[in-house]
Image 1 (spheres, one colour):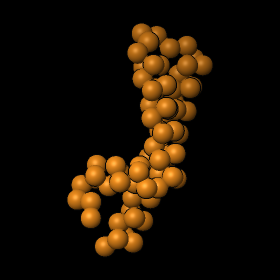
Image 2 (tube, rainbow, N blue to C red; image 1 turned 60 degrees about the vertical axis):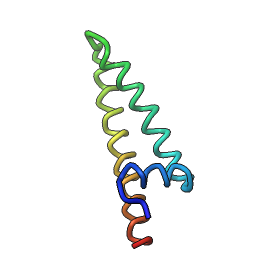
Image 3 (cartoon, helix red, strand yellow; image 1 turned 45 degrees about the vertical axis):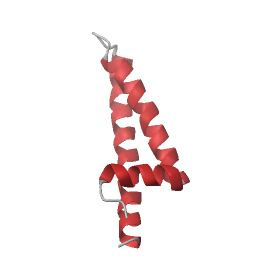
Length: 76
């Protein structure tokens, strides 16, 4: 049984296609967000995009956490 959150995430990355897809999307959005945050000034459109990316990342993280919780419940 996985003991830590990171071990569990690693296990799910290897065994759960849905979790893997969510994690990969989350990582892509994270990279896009970092690129925006690296700019010294954002246009109004970029500010809207930054806000959208943050919301989408949070939704993906919530979905990933739901899968983690479900896995823990099924494997107690």
